[in-house]
Length: 106
Image (cartoon, rainbow, N blue to C red):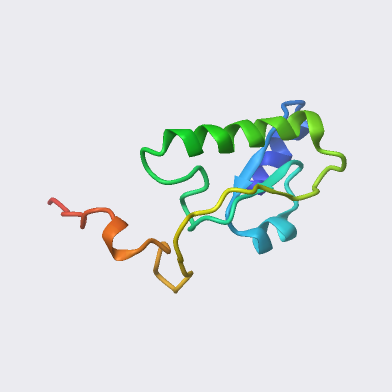
């Protein structure tokens, strides 16, 4: 998505990239990167946590006006609230927050 942000910016549309993989953001260098230290796939917070989600969105959009240098990664102060890990094949969520198992249909 960071690469896509750069392409969109080239045609004159401002973007903000919210990500949870800081090392990847540093390599891709999107124009306005915002880092939130949450499990992968949960950049805007926990499901149904509207207050936290809105706060992240407001912080992210604020970078359109406040980012001093293109590509400078802005670290958001939000915390997930519990420990998570990045194991291969894992989304980092605790077992009690895993989505229901998918039942494939034929």
